[in-house]
Amino acid sequence: MGEKYSNYTVKDLNEPISPLEKFAKKVLDKLIEEGIPPIPSNYSLYFFNLLEEEKPEFKKQVYELISLEDSDDMDKNLELEKKLKLSFKYSKEILQKTALMYKLTTQLKKILEDSIAQMAHIASPKTVEKYLKSVDSKISKISSNMDKELKEIKEIYSKNVEIIKEIESNSVFDMVYGVYNAKYFKKLLENEIKLIKKFSHKSSLITIKVSDKVLKHFKLHKSLTIVNRSVAKILLKTSRRTDVIAHLGEGVFAMLLKHTDIIGAEKTVERISDMISNSAVFIEGNEVEIKIVGAICNLKPGIKADDYFKKCKEALKKAENENKLYVVEGA
Image (tube, rainbow, N blue to C red):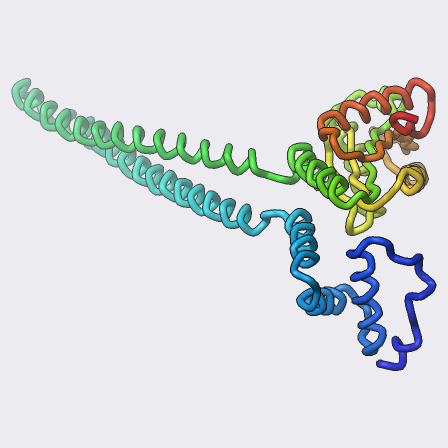
């Protein structure tokens, strides 16, 4: 295994400039020197081991970068789990209360049926009056219990609805298309802009949608959903592990291309367009050729995520009006 990797060097790579790039090369050199396969898990292990030997100031900078890259997923998952457990608890209580309501309703029905049967054999008015008072007492007791249970069910249901709303507000996925939702994507985009400001690397944002010329042929909302699901699947299939895909709403999909310049973003849109055009999609009994339009933005520090969304929206309209595959914002 050692000989397999020891014959390779990284001298042919462009000479690293920043301290972090030099350190990254140092890690890779160390892996090759010791004949360790340079796969992500091994690289990560050597990265942190060698980092401990670096100067405190450099280590601090690297850990700041890692903290920016890493999300608070564990805290979020813990909070989500707590809310889900609470929701399950409320749901269980509602089921128990509903079962008790069913039992009380059954008792009430039996009392009424027995009362009808008994009164058929009573001739004396006084006896009937006495018997009715007895029945009324039983019914009142059950009715009181039912009112109590109904009130508690309503309170538990309200609490459960609030918990579910909180869970939905903190969700990160668009459940229709299986990609990130706009709210979470905005957070990731803003985080990437911070990283660009700190480390001056290139990243791009692209948005795409099915062309209006194609969409106008579909009459049913269900058909539009099927088309957009096809687009979402292709985006997921063609994306790199570092790419972030989201649905921004109204059939507009976004991709955050980390460490990718405009040229790389253009090639990505062209590749996606080719794959989508070559995919057979059957809608309303007919095979449909899907065409897309795209917008590309070069991410720069100091510009908010919402501003980029507006820029991309305008670029999409321009691409549609000028019959272009994509428009580079600001070009």
